[in-house]
Image (cartoon, rainbow, N blue to C red):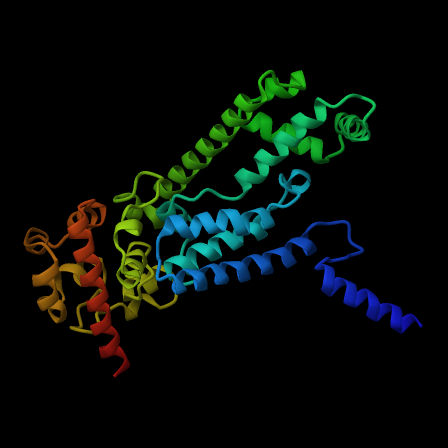
Length: 342
């Protein structure tokens, strides 16, 4: 009899799509939701391939309307806690869409796509819910529960209320917490969202500029926004190659050393034997790609092969020049791949 009941519960779980656990935590449920989120990302990619579309606006619109609501469901309760699991789904979507390796830097991908972490959305949901709670009459059970948590918080216990106070204070809204209310809700929520987004951009800038590993990236990418080439390079293969080159994930020896997947002694060019296969050598110097360089790369850059010209060519917003650069990188890497695999 007990075995039959267990089967019935298992069947109910599969039918309803629910997860029951004896642990009072959200981690187990979130892990299940994140698996569904990653599966949904793959389905979006399949749909876009059937439509022969690579438009990033369409991809992220589908992500925000289909995947994000599932990931942030009931975030009013848990959204101020550890949300690393759902953030991994968004970074997974970035890497799948841009066709970059899984070891690519998340910070650089956020910079390329101009996407904000999902924590911002969950935090806004929590604040909106907090405003709703403090406006409820004292007769409501939800308001009584909030008052109980507030008393526990004042006694030194860490709970949901403590996290609300913390995020308000961190973003300069301590007076709102002291007053336990706001006058115009929509205006406050919009200002809170803008403030937390601005803080993230400032932290992103300081991390990129202050980290020695990312300083090269900051030389040609100093603004947090969606890169235009993601839209005007319509050939997915060319666009993905340019992205991998920009985030140092296209397989050059210097890139592998940068990711510490090879020792520094093995950084020479496999095509001509030059001591270091870096961006300067690959773009302007290696004789194996001379015919491509003459066709796709400007002569001004080739005449002065240095890091300054690498920066200029990557920061260039001229569409024809950027498209030609993506073609050069793609065809040159094809030649390199054939040479290595032979």
